[in-house]
Length: 364
Image (cartoon, rainbow, N blue to C red; front, side, top):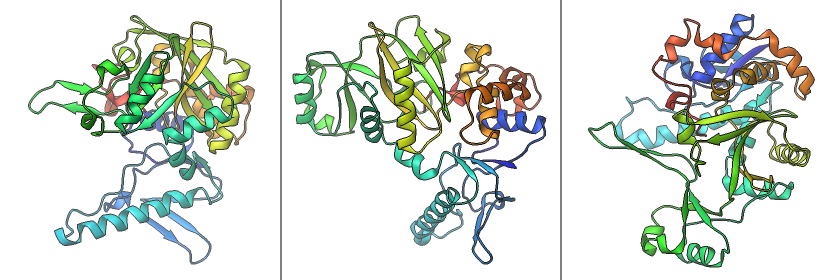
């Protein structure tokens, strides 16, 4: 069995896990996504059965394919200007051919590409979460100014606004940056209608929370961690990045666990990172899931979490393995801390970067 990781070898998660797997004897192949360069080319052959070659690696029956974060397809820059659009379109469809085909081969895909594309959609997440019995805040996804104003005018509680995905603005010639964050909003804060059409956004009834929870889904097993920031931040990601947070493992409430597993089954995924807000009555509110969200940062806050070892056990065990099987197998693998102490870590991880620096951000 080979572990094929669809990510750059310099991706910190891929690098750490590749090192850990190879140190105990597994064969690991990294493929960063389709490009014109030899190690990123892809060949699909249907002469005698189906054969997939990614760079220098052939995908074989029984392999595990972790679709971590393949880079978007890149055409050869030598293509003439008149042909660039054609070439890029052909690269896009060839990349799709590879990624969608994988889940139809006799391999285990974590997660199937079709499922990952669907569940990355925030509207689908909210719909399935509610359908499966998870608490979800009243939400509005729109670029319509009138819809925004109506939502805020009819909300009897506080509301927040957040972007679909994180974004960073860098000021030219400066190290200063601005990043997207969740923020509280009301009708008095709204700009002119035209400004509201500049970018769609997600508006939600605010959960007045006591804490946050990050839950990691591994097959049929959930690992949850209660997270508190020093200022009880509405958006905890920047606080975590600055080390201004505490983390502790907590049991997942049975009704939440049942609903999450039903959610995962409907979504067709077996791995992902979920975020919950916990209100002052102890109720867990589903906020979102990232099916390939960062998770090694948890080991930086709590080495006892052993998320790296658990994930490696989950990755190498048969699909559907129990919590008991994962935790029995995790001791076969080195830890995140051992990776940091290895020479290999110097390639992708510099000492001045903490665990939640951009290379290991907790963003999706």
